[in-house]
Image (cartoon, rainbow, N blue to C red; front, side):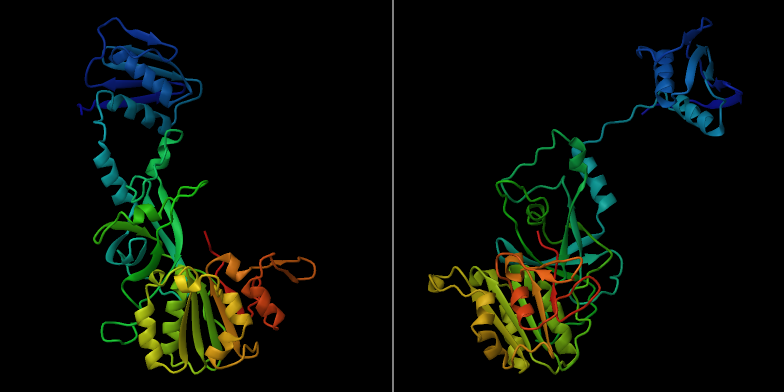
Length: 404
């Protein structure tokens, strides 16, 4: 704190005179041609003026008058800067406590509130977030960004080291998440397609040998009522665009990759989709599936919808793991769907582990895809005559490209 000094500034060419409402020296003035070590009010003022304006060449303080010269003529802007330095000479700013800083950073950065958390297991949550402003329209399958500050506590044992870059602690940890959906309400009816809250399906990422996750350990330390950042814009080309009512739709995912499919399936069913719909999800354990009950309700109500779960680490799978690629190539998918995988009337959607998807690289000259060494669904579908989305050309095989 401290009292402000009233200043009247007059600039003429390269010289400026500042009249103060109090004296800083006696009748013997003090002259400075470089920034001095601040030991008293005149030297403190001179030091701040030289620091603020590199064009200043001399400062002379006598009683209540400060005369300052510059290498270039004074302007309205430089006069204002110097006047502010003099005005606040005796103002002492109280240092912000850590609690005050965190409160300020939250107020500055967060724009939404966590309204609901369904803890399916300690490392798998379904949560809903309500933004401060109305939700902009978006398409099923699209994503937005969630964020929390690096200043927030972590739910794991990892420790962040900000010693090399202290400013990092005041920044935001951001990650893209597809919008999910519980699909049905308490009465078993399909949810309104225009909610006031946005649902996300999140797994807590564990620290690895080469990487310490920034966002999810902080997210899992939050509770209902806590504030968070949510992006205002929803984006992404992973949508139902181009799907006709009679088309068969095959949704393939690993883990929380089924999040966008929940939204897309609910949209198809709301619109009374005629074609067959199947969703196949691969997880390690049955407890890694948070939407099973909702899908069971839908499969019981809609004859054209099937939901299939494949687990890889349950005891009965020992030595007999069936991955999504196997489920397609051994004919089980077509048998369960009740229709052949025909590129003339089928769309395939994939979200999750790249090893399942097998996203291709494209030859710039020929436009032909080259697939990775591990055989993924994209390669299988390509061999069966399907066209994979490429740049602006929309095919009938679509995959969500975001994965981390």
